[in-house]
Length: 114
Length: 113
Image (tube, rainbow over all chains, first blue to last red; front, side):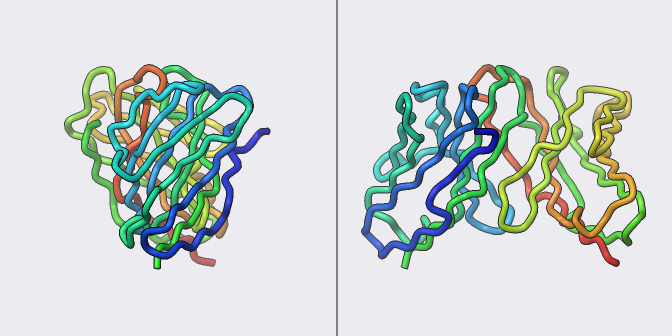
């Protein structure tokens, strides 16, 4: 498609429950990124992929977060045991250009942990 | 990435030209300057990118002085729909998945009727 799609739009989980978010990048884009926006404007990079390969996962809290981009499937971001501080909007972005900051962002998934 | 400084907020009347300046004193030789726009409850949207002098597209212009220590995003004749947060980011071209964007706090532009 021509836009990055993210599902669900909203997700509510009790503390300790699992949360799984999905992202369909723009067709033809090789690079996928996940970001977390906690406060109004504060973005945190989590992980990037080139096709199905993890490229940079320096932002991921690996003990609870995992992500995949498998062929012919939406990419996913999973939080095994959610904590209150995981409440945020999670954005997925895709890019086709090798050396550019031109990324296309999805509408985000708002995760609320109660 | 080079540290950037932007005004926290700006107000403008409809129909005016708006200039948002970003300071990046520690910009490196191979850094590019990129601007994004984020509407409420939406993901950021790429607006424009440049290296030096002036870049113009259908949405905005980007002015970069010779010393490149600052840049100015210019929005011609803003409308209410331009109310958004505008982010400036500065960084080198990176290969593939290393091109993660790191936003600062951005400038909240409020367009007034």
